[in-house]
Length: 638
Ligand SMILES: *[C@@H]1O[C@H](CO)[C@@H](O)[C@H](O)[C@H]1NC(C)=O
Ligand SMILES: *[C@@H]1O[C@H](CO)[C@@H](O)[C@H](O)[C@H]1NC(C)=O
Ligand SMILES: *[C@@H]1O[C@H](CO)[C@@H](O)[C@H](O)[C@H]1NC(C)=O
Ligand SMILES: *[C@@H]1O[C@H](CO)[C@@H](O)[C@H](O)[C@H]1NC(C)=O
Ligand SMILES: *[C@@H]1O[C@H](CO)[C@@H](O)[C@H](O)[C@H]1NC(C)=O
Ligand SMILES: *[C@@H]1O[C@H](CO)[C@@H](O)[C@H](O)[C@H]1NC(C)=O
Ligand SMILES: *[C@@H]1O[C@H](CO)[C@@H](O)[C@H](O)[C@H]1NC(C)=O
Image 1 (tube, rainbow, N blue to C red):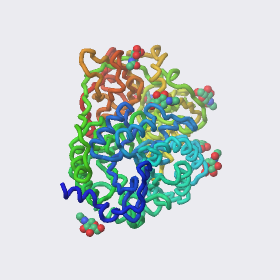
Image 2: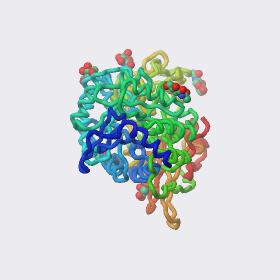
Image 3: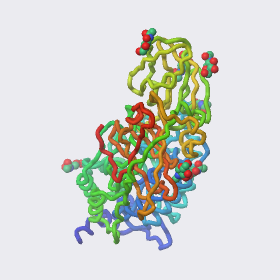
Image 4: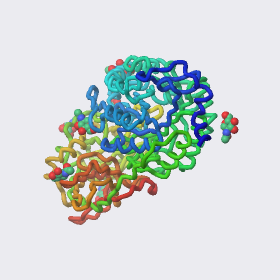
C-alpha cells in the first residue's frame, strides 16, 4: 500500500511540494505548474486519469449510466469532443436540446463527480462525418478548411460565439467541471500548417472563455507533427497508443514543453473499424501495461475511447483512400458500445487503483439485453415509386449538382434523366473522373442494372430506346474525417458519360428520408407493392410489441440482418444507422431500450438497397424478417 501511495505522489513529491500560492477554500482554480511539472487544482498538485466518451454517440437517457461506470472505474476526468455539424445542421440553426444538450451532459458529469476536458474543435476528426465540420461549408467549393480562409473563419467565429458562451459557466473557475479546453485537433497532421489560423483560434477562445482557462493542443508524438500543431498560448500535449515507448513519446512532448505536466491526450484502448476490414481489437493486457507505464511516470492520461458508442444515422466518417467506418463505434473500449463493463474495464480499473484511490461501492452491472426475436417485414414500397412522399424538392440542371449544391447533407440523392436517343445493347455508362461519391444504385426504367462505386473504374452496360429513364440513387457513405481531403463533396461530383456522350439534363431529387420516416410516411400506402419481378431500392416495414407480462422491459437489444445486403434502418422513426452484413465486420446494430415503446407497437423501417434473400424469391407474399438478438456481432467475416 505504502509503495502504491508513493507511486501515486511521484509528480508531487519531487516538485510540487510547496505551492507558492494557496487559495482560500472559496476559490476554484486550475492551472499549469511549470516549476512542478504538473497541474494545480485549487493550488494543489493534480494529475488526471481520464476517459473519452462522446455524448453524440450515446442516447441521452444513458449518459448518466455511462458516466457513473466511468467514475467507478477510478477515472477522475472525462474527455469529450463537440461535433459542430451535430449542433448546427444548417447555417445559423442550432440544436442544444435532447441528445444535443451539451449543458445537460456537462452538468451530469460534474454531478457524478467527474472533471471534464472539452475538445470543441472546430475540427475534431473523431471518425465523425467530415471531422465535425458542417457540410454546408462546402457550398463555397473553394473554401480552404482549417485555415485563415475568410469564409471559413466567419463560420467558425459565428459558431464559437454561440458554443463558447454555453461552455463558459461550466469552466472549473466558474464552478463547473471543465478543467482544460483543446484548440483544434491534431493540427500538425494537416497539410495547411497555418499558424495564424491557430493563433486566431486561441484569441477567439480567450475572448469567449476568459484569461484563466488552460488551453491546450494535441498532436501525434513526433517532432514533425508538433511543428505545425503547437501554438503559443496553448499547452502542447501528445497522443500515442499501447506498444509505444512511453518515455520516448513524452520526450517528444518535452522537446516543445520543457516544463509542465506530461500529458497523453489520446491513449488508445482499442481502434476504429472500417467496412470490409476485420474488426480491430487491442488485448487488454497490452493496454493495461502501457497505462501502468504512463501512470508510473506521474503523467496525465486520457484513454481514447473509454466508451465508444454508436454512429447513429449518417454520422460515421471515412478515411482515405475512401474507406467509410461502420455504424458501431465500439472501439474495443473498456465499456462496450452498449455501455457494458468488459474484462478490459476491470483490468484497467485495477491498474488505475495502483495510483488513485478507487471509489467505494458496487460497479454497475451490464444493462440487461433481450432477444425479442423475429420481426416480419412485409409491406414493400419501391423508392422510385414513392418520390412524391420522399422528396420535398427537385431541381433540373444540365449537369449533375452535388449534395452540397442541393443543400442536402447526408443520406441519398436521386439523379434522374432520360436517354436523348436510343442506345444499343452494351452501351457503357461510366464516370470517367471518378465522380461517384460514394455509391450509386443504377436503374434503367426502374430495373436495377448494378452499382457504380468510388475508386472503382467500374462501368455498367445499359441500353434502351429514346426516352428510356435512367436513375442513379447515390449514397453518401460518410465524409472523410482525416487527412488532406476533408472537402469531400458528395453525389455525382463530375459528369457521367453514356457511350461517347456526356449525359445532360438531369433532375436531382432531394430525399428527406428521416423526416418522411419519422412522420410515418403518410401517403406511402398507395404505392405499396406486394409483388415485383425485379429488385430496386425498397422500403420494408414491420412492427413488434413488447410482451407486457415480462418485467423490466423494455431492455436493450441488437438488430440482426441475416439475409439482407445493405441499407439503412429506422426504429420508431429514429435512424439507427447503416447495415451491411455482407461486407462485415459489423452484423448487428445496437437498439437502445430508450427507443422502445411498451404500450404501443414498435415500428421498424428498412431501406434495402441491393436486395434481400427474401426479395429475390419471386413469389407473391414471401415474408422477410429481421431478428432482435441479445448480443452484438461486431467481428463477423469480411
Ligand atoms: C434537436 O434534437 C433533438 C434530438 O436530440 C430533437 O428531438 C429536436 O427536435 C431537435 N430540435 C430542433 C429544433 O431541431
Ligand atoms: C469562396 O471562397 C474563396 C476562398 O476563400 C473566396 O475567395 C471567395 O470569395 C468565396 N466566394 C464566395 C461567394 O464567398
Ligand atoms: C525507451 O526509450 C528510451 C530512450 O528514450 C530507452 O532508454 C529505453 O530503453 C526504451 N525502452 C524500451 C523498453 O525500449
Ligand atoms: C439486346 O439484348 C436483349 C437481351 O439480352 C436481346 O433480347 C436483344 O435482342 C438485344 N438487342 C440487340 C439489338 O442486340
Ligand atoms: C460537365 O461538363 C460540362 C460541359 O463540358 C462542364 O461545363 C461542366 O463543368 C462539367 N461538370 C462537372 C461537374 O465536371
Ligand atoms: C430535360 O428534362 C426535362 C424533364 O425530364 C424535360 O421536360 C425536358 O424536355 C428535357 N430537356 C431537354 C433539352 O432534353
Ligand atoms: C407504430 O406505428 C403505429 C401505426 O402507425 C402507431 O400507432 C404507433 O404509435 C407507432 N409506434 C411508435 C412507438 O411510434
